[in-house]
Image (cartoon, rainbow, N blue to C red):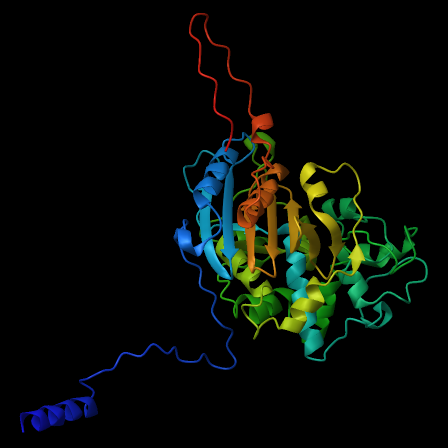
Length: 425
């Protein structure tokens, strides 16, 4: 009788909501919303969750930050699709004591090209444009030399215009309107027949801005925010100089030896080529999306279209050890591809006056690194291979060349010998 009474009370309690049964099922997200990408704040992961020794990596970053050209730096990593490290180092303004944080905003520079290509590929999936549309039917201001009838939108986004490398960037930096420059590019002698070779561009690439605005009837910045930044939770991402300087925390630009400089708007005037700003947290979300974490925003086919190698990128000028280690270099749509130690990698680097940036990831392992810094110090970017050496379990290499970069020790007084410093980790 007592058992019956007890069961009766339990049934009554459940009926009125007093008894709850814990559930481990996560409610499905609404169909139209992109899957959220979570960025943990703890910089050091649990050892079992990671292949990378982050204590070692952070020690290397601490050494890097001792270099006289480094002011501020933000670094984030992903392993097997999840964020395993995100941290700021140094200062937003040299000597201010204001630390770089995970939400500090930097410039992306040429990493911005991946945003433009993502928007174009989305529009292609919507049937509003085709990657095979010839330049003559795109309705842009871009004019090319020689016979450009073969040049398509895909050729523009993979730098196969036939123009000399970085055509008229100097005039853009001098203040000339980018649309006027695009219209006059056709007066230049071609480096190669259009659509046949790789020559990196900014002004010609920014024809993508005109394509996107023409097909959507919206500003480029608004389209990027609505179709990419907001759905991916990139809350500090923006297009343009105002977006950088209005951020609650933003990294000010510096030349070598921590010499301050003003924010230059030249490449903000070609937003598809170099107009994005964001925090390292946002850049991590962008990398996760490139790994397939947000299929409602960037489909598997879109990622294939962007990342697939379309043209070889032979080296020009002097190549350092890192560039020699990254073999099979090629370009897709706003993305570079490489081979390193038997692994296929996708990424891009960026540089604009006072800022550096990079993203490099292994699509198969869904692992990679992102970096943002506020100085003209390209050596910082070599940290990417130190991360991949740790990820792949390779012997450590001093890619940062910190031993060679160390200033000579000050002479010591006679009779006061100093211990020999230990080699860098």
